[in-house]
Image (cartoon, rainbow over all chains, first blue to last red; front, top):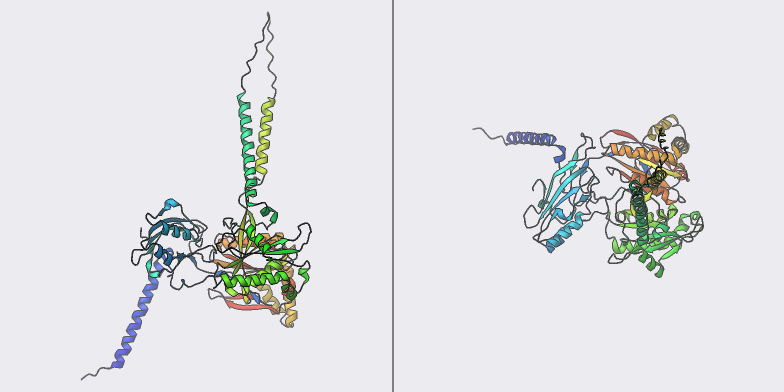
Length: 202
Length: 204
Length: 201
């Protein structure tokens, strides 16, 4: 009777598993490389807690070096002191059925510009005002401009905040070979990441 | 034969009338825009122009806000007639409801004796002597108190403002920055108030 | 009967219209040459506070008196490197003095030229959105602070907001008496080795 050689099975099994993992990773990298850069998003997990303090000069000594190269990420510019957070818990308490749509324009300086006519907040005035006050202070990094739409849809599950970025276009003067990624597009304190959807939804 | 001169009818000279109306229009436009400048200046208080902040052409487009938002140090000349002059620092504290203006805060600072004069020879003092001056001790204590009551954790929104006449020596501004930096990232920046023209129109 | 031909009317200048024209032109030039500021507005410049650590910068600007500045950027690393190679036999103090005297000699200029260099820096930053610059301004205590504000104003608000700045107190004498100035080899974000200049105070 043939005896099972467990060691051999284990060895071959792990080799096959390893090869499958390598193939999957390789396919994933290939798929990502084929995506247009503007569709690549840096997931906001981990950015929630990041506190961006502007660079401060050191006095013990100094190193003079060439310019630092960094990726261009279109996101809220938290280094701008005027940016205010929207308190999600307070919004939920004021109006748990908030259904507010705001259509804004991101200008070339990264500021959100919108007028009263761009806000649909029928029956949710207080929540709408609270959202407006925060949105007016949001400033993005000046890498894209165009139309960005926010839908605060609190009664829904998994889609409490929908951000439509299909109207955004990268700045024409950024060289084509420089990728512009999408980062954290909202400045909201207390919203679970799973409740935010980004893309074309309305 | 006698020829009779016909009297020419003197009617309204239209081109001349148009010229005069045009002139009056330009005149009133120019004087209107200039007088609006004066009205706006007077509304905000002429002290703003007298204060002589450094000018900058930066494009920071914050709305001018008279309401005091955070701790501010206002540094002025004790006597503007002297060339190199002693400086006086006023500590302006915002109200709880953020409803006090800079002017009101200054009056309150005078009432509460939250001001001090830098000695005239402060540039010649050593670092230790400078830190021991009344003005520096006032700045140190006020930043400490304000930080303990308002800035609980590091945040980029925590800042201290400086509103100083433009010839204020850098030593004073540097001292305030160093006092803020003693708290690490809790007070990561200061705000310098400057004057900027809202709109500059230059024909040539 | 011979009729005298009507004399041709003398062509006279219509004085009234002529004066109107002159007046209009005068007013036009007055208005267009007059600098109109509708109102002054107070604005805020955010300046980071210093840290008691080793700092990193792309440009160092040391203000010297009211009319000169010392400018140091990555291009100075070649000179420092060359002096280190050729004068390596000198004591550390003498080597430091040699390096700094050459640097100060070659990289000191007037405030006017500083304006040009800052403009070039802005242009460079606006052509390279991925590049981040930090400019450190060192100023002596007696300098009126509006000089620093002028420099900061030229650096702030670039198209991609990729120039940051900071200012600290310091004099050229302190740089001349620094502990050490030397080349350090570091890897940049691309993994390439670069020669950076380090100054220890």
